[in-house]
Every structure is written in C-alpha cells, then in structure tokens.
Length: 362
Figure 1 (cartoon, one colour):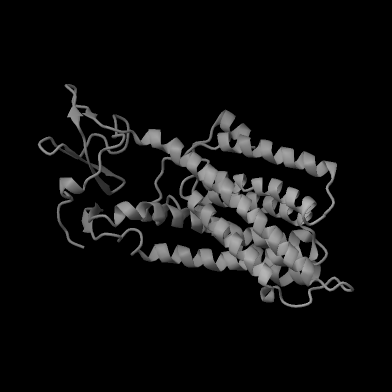
Figure 2 (cartoon, one colour):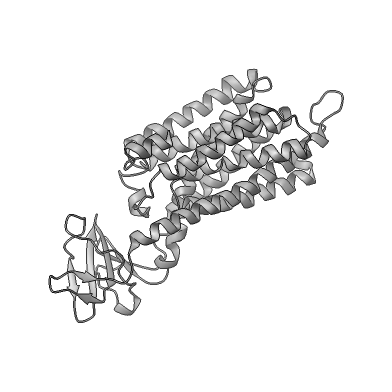
C-alpha cells in the first residue's frame, strides 16, 4: 500500500455509470479532469473514478450507461438462477430420501448403517452441493429475502417427486399448499425492492452491516437458540417431533445464507478488483486486496462450509425418521423464515420497503 494520490491511469478506468446528481452522496465530483474525460468522486470515504463522454453547458456529465438500468437485470438473473438451483436441490433431497428408505430396517424402521456409507446418498448430496452453489451465486445478485423465498419452488418439485416416485400419499390440502407457495413467491419477488447497496468489504465491516447492534443481537440469539436445542430439546423430542431437527437445520442455515450473501457479493466484485490497483480511503491498494486476498473473504467461505455441512446433518436426520412430503415443506417454511429474518437484520434489506411492497411481502 502506498500513500499516493488516487488517480489511476485512464486506460484502466471503466466508463461512468449513473453519476451522482445534486442531493446524492458524492455530489459534486471531487475532481473532473476534462482533458482525459475523467471524473473522481468520494462517497463514504471511498474513492471512485470513471470516464465520461460529454459535458453539457450546465456542467453536467454525460454518460453512456446507467447503473440503475442494470439493476433489474441482475435481480432477475438472481431469481432465475435461484429457481434452477432449487429444482436441483429438490431432486437431491429426494435422492437422499430414497437412499434412507433403502437403508431402513424392515422390522424396526431404523437405519441399518450410517447414511454416509450409502453411494446413492453421496449422489444426492453432490447434487445438493451443486444446487447450493447456484443459490450462493444468486445471493450476490438479489436480496437474501427474495432468494430464500424463491427456494420454496423446491416444495412444488418435491411434492411431485414424493408422490410420483417415492409413492408417498398425496392429499388435496397439499395441492392447495403448493398453489399457495407459487402465489406467495410471486408476491415476494415483486414486494422486495432491488437494492442499490454494493456490499464491499468496507461496507460489511462497518456499522451498516456486521458491526451494527442489530447484527450482534441476531448472531448472539442464534448461538443461544442452537445451544438450547442441541443440549435440552433434541435428546428428548427429536424423533417424535419433526420441528426439532428442522428448526436446528434452519437456524444454522440462516448463518449460511448471511455468509453467502457477503461472499457472493465479493465474488462478483473480484474481476474488477483484481484487474488493477485502485484507491480505498486515499490509499492505493494492490489488485485483489478487497476480495480474494482479504481475510474476510476466506472467513465467510469457512463459515459457509461449516454451517452447510452442519445443517445438512440435521436435515438428513429428519429425512430418516419422517416422510419427504412432510419434511421438505416444513423445512422450507422454517428455513425461509429464518433466512428472511437474518437478511433483514444483518443487511437491513427492508430499509426501503414501503406501503404496497410491504403488504405484498407479508
């Protein structure tokens, strides 16, 4: 790191998107280099520089593209990616259920051997990992509340597979529930606005996100809930009440969702961050210093791996003792609730939700 003026070479600069206007943070530009068509801005202590094309008589800068126009595209890309990922996850859960059914003792109904020794179970868990990678990327494109809610599409796919392939009983109320899921997902997609906040390392390690009091309270509450469930509730009630294992799974998974949201955002920034040196807080940083080479990037990845494996263990315990037509819908309900609460508290995703949008979401 070198204490040098933050003026990178113009050939390394991107074209300006939507520039700050009067009333925005970063207005007026900190510096405008008209000879090189370059504008510099300072927003929340961060330096931004980009190339513009023309300047009007009133002094406004003319740009080629607008970042506002690109937001809906990334939002819908996240939604579509999440739908595809959750279809794969639904297939993987039923593949694992088939493995558990074949492994069950015909007399006692209990597992004959550990499920990790079943080849078919590994096929299912591999598909599950593939689907979760797709969801992880979706968290970098759309709010966590939307991606988690769209995951309920997996309930529809699961219901079809459970009835047609696993020969589990299909009921009229299940069909009504599936229709309600589809309607709810549509309302949530249109009820949660696209967020313009870019989750950089500086933003996440500030009082806006992970260092906010609401984030401390939420993460502390998760630790307490997990401890109570594991120590006092699971040994007594888990095999009789499906909510015990699924609540444990969902609470742990909400930490996965929070970590995925931050990790995926850094992944999407890696290409530009690693392309050249750039300025942060008036210091010229080397390539990749704010993404792949930052300790927080790898911490988030470790949290994702640990919590994903941990939650998968409890989900499989539930599938061993209960049918998938019951397990998967309940799991998606608890998972969606915990993920939405996590995203809302840690990332403050409902900050801009008002009136009709809030009604549609609820």
